[in-house]
Amino acid sequence: MDAVANNQSTPKVDEVDTTLIYRQSRWTRLTHWLWAFSLFFMLLSGLQIFNARPQLYLGKQSGFEFNNTILEIGAENTANGPRGFTAILGHRFDTTGVLGWSGPPGQETPRAFPAWATIPSYYDLGTARVVHFFFAWILTTTLLVWLIAGLVNGHIRRDLAPRLSDMRKLPRDIVDHAKLKFHHTREYNTLQKMAYGGVLFVALPLMIVTGLAMSPSMDSVLPWLNEILGGRQTARTIHFAVMV
Image (cartoon, rainbow, N blue to C red; front, side, top):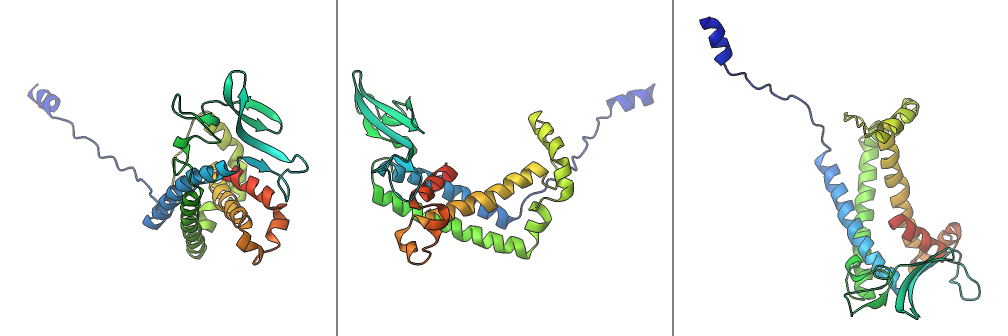
């Protein structure tokens, strides 16, 4: 009886959790945070730049003699007073208070994106361009360094490049994610590799290339770039779509 009592009174020792948590290297974490920081400022300053010309076109020219506008954000006077609107491929939507016409009650002004969504909050195209280009160079430089390092140390080939076995697992990964069943392992699953690769090797390079295509100074260096992208206005539209 005493032995049983002693066993019952003996506190259980908590089991030590030996689960390994795999973390990215410090360099990878640093570059990724720099990208996130840069993209934040580029997005908000880019919206300020967009406010200077709140239309997007397809082609080499703006729609003066013909209508090639695919997106327009603006304001118009109506019987009920000024109203904001957003037009997408000719379909107009009332977006008063958010897009086209926004501001504190009684102090609304016509502007594509509201003050809280732009850097700076007041209209200043020059400052917005300085901020945008500054962080664009940070993004481009760190991305280039990361790509070179990833090729040299084998990170891209070993961890990011999808293999044939990954593609066989793709249907199951899609079903698991739809059911919110996430498997945390050392390796990226197929969807993670595709998402990672889509951002790093498609979206970010396309954003950088279209940004260069809009620069008049680049026309003398890379005159063929605009032709490949379908014109400066098309490059601007692609740049905006990828950024947003």
